[in-house]
Length: 317
Ligand SMILES: [Zn+2]
Image (cartoon, rainbow, N blue to C red; front, side, top):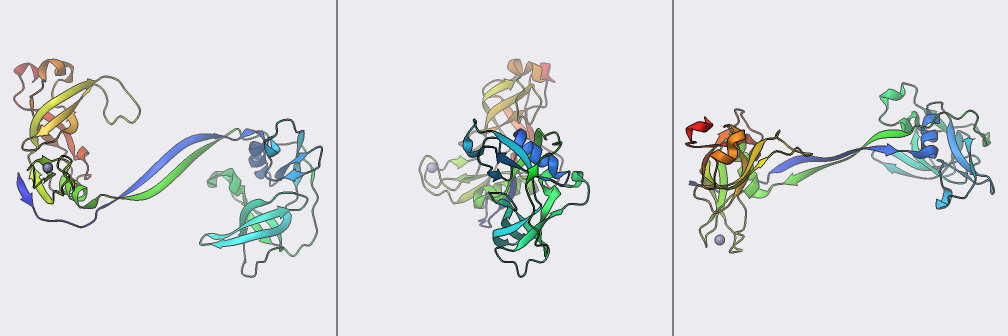
């Protein structure tokens, strides 16, 4: 174990949260999306009032007892309002004969765009397979000099609704490790060593390295290079498979007290006949880190393949 020099460069980790799932569209949105491939814009007309809603809704106003029908809406309309973004102009567009606005982008020359301007649909001309979503078949709306007002008509021969869409929510962010975790992960990746921090009051060495002692509540301040050997304080043999598992069962999950430290590091014990783990391992068994043969490493505790038992009884060899 040795003292490491101060280190205060902030470390960032690029991270992404993703949630892939299947979106069930329902008849209205499914028909709307399917008909975009035919360059048609579909709306819902409430039979009793004649009100036309675009995009269509299965239950207008949240009411299930309203009789509705699909209609084909004109591809021309007027800009109700718009906003300029770094990715272009986004507008609410009132298609001719509709009673609601459709949110979409305005394409082409938008320099002189004003509320009330007439626009017409602009369609994607390539294959639908090139698009991230079938919604983008309708590429946007462009200014038009054509002053003809279109009319809503009954939808003839509606296409079969798209029932499901693969969907993924994605969130990119940067996670700041701070100087303690940052140094620890850097040392794992570049020097194959484990870094802890030492409390000036109780003199405990804490792994993973952290800024404050969780017993004395004082700043630790000192980073220490600690041994990659230790003692098993507890372990489980995992036989069950579950989502997100990094290893295939069976494997050994253990709490390891690294020599000279006051904390428990959770890692795997391997490199021996796992089927005999309960017979060969015990509380107090000695282990040492087996580092992955990659340089530089990933900068995570996965740079340690596992901890292998030291001086195992011969039956485990
Ligand atoms: Zn302390």
